[in-house]
Image (cartoon, rainbow, N blue to C red; front, side, top):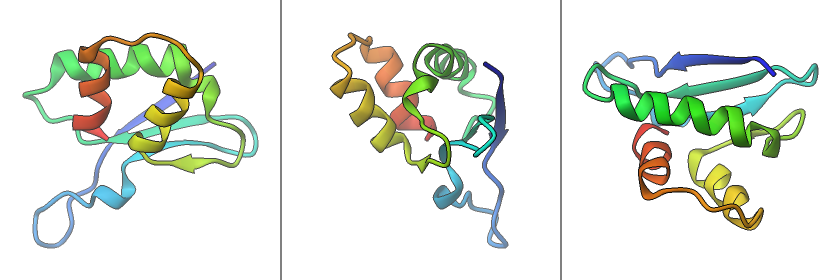
Length: 93
């Protein structure tokens, strides 16, 4: 599986537009992750990438979901994630 990672875009006011953050899968199966990953979050970014590798399969073709929805799907799959992993998704997405 291949994933494309991207940082959120700044709006005209210089603030990040959180509507663009989330995870999606194209109809062709490409996984795309948009998040706020500034220089102060390198460990969280690595944790997020690990989560995408492990649980990106919970995002179906054509889905475009928020970090909160992705966490709900992870929780429903009955896997155990660490608090560090949960915080990475909540903070960055």
